[in-house]
Image (cartoon, rainbow, N blue to C red; front, side):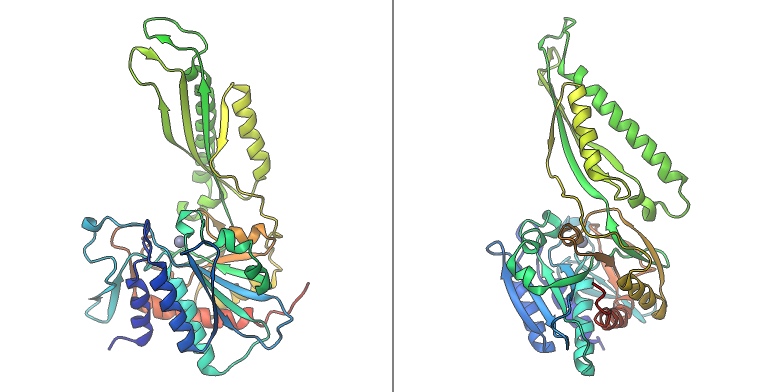
Length: 404
Ligand SMILES: [Zn+2]
């Protein structure tokens, strides 16, 4: 017999919220129906037309208290269909371990419909128990996280509808943990996509042309590749798993190198695009200045494809009441909490830019990690084990006294 919670999860997975043409309308309809069935308040906000954000509400007993916001994104990344053993949008349930357990194959099974589905299951448990807590808890289901949040958390976090929620603290995306630890992520690296462009003298390839574009851009490339090497050395010297430590160092990759049209013509322009992931342990705005100076001293132009604002939320310290609750919930549900830095970016950054603390935490551990990969799946028993985790977490977060 398939548990009802699994059937609901699979229904959510079957909705094709896949880029570049996600079916957000059908998704919103499904989520609204879930809210109604569970007995929650709900609201649908469209900051960008055709990109609905569904907000569910578990009402608290003291509306004067700042609320808790559990966020998840509804969109998923594209698939290479021929590389999958099962239809990525059929949520096929495949038995293993002599039929004692199942793998559910679907795009989004890990990133991150599992977490959204678990929020709903936890709300369902709480509603059924009749328990009430002081703080109101919202769950937001947002589009476009995988496309820099253009129709999702970026505009939503700046909207009146968001201000009306009076959010005091957020929970956001946590990754599936491949080892026995549950990673708690109060901060993340900033994404710094940057293009350097050099212009120089051009001419015949047989000549020694002076002041060429390539001569100007090479020192920039070399300096950033040196930074890459030193950060990699730092990473390799850290104790523990490399994947887990990634957020503690700055990542540098030269991703696009452009210039030159023909072998015997010295190009007038050369450009280099870097994907840099800057560690939150250092000052982001100082780094922006460093990059600008690097361009200027080599006579290059610089363009940031996207420039993040400074996170203005207070750093989460060990005495933080919400962090304590997350840790105790991990321990009381048989998990091993480890606080670290998220290596990639999540929607939590939009809340942090608003000065609201937000922590990423996922319920799934000891599970092969396949986000954005072929044959993404979720083990059924791991999903079911996540329900008591979020149920307990929501109950405890909603009871944290207001200290401000
Ligand atoms: Zn995600």
